[in-house]
Length: 92
Image 1 (spheres, one colour):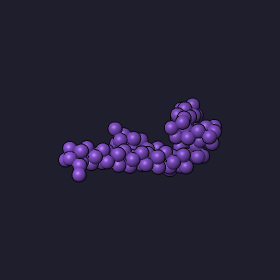
Image 2: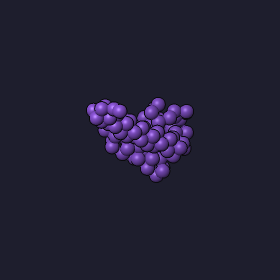
Image 3: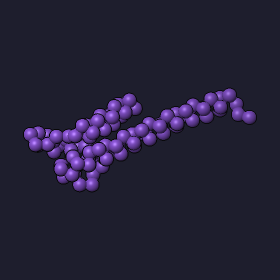
């Protein structure tokens, strides 16, 4: 049998690990959603094969800043970006 202290440490570690895994899975899903929802924007902006976390959002936003009059981000892409931002903020 484990001592109560050992059991507490194990339970605390297990709870923290599961929470971290859930957050990682949520952010991974959010990143995939942005990659999928912003395909047209990435192509228009010339972002190539960049993905979220590897320059995609910066590329799109830079292109948007330089082409305000002719470039718009679709509602689906905006929504996916907003969800990613919200979940990242909730993680902190």
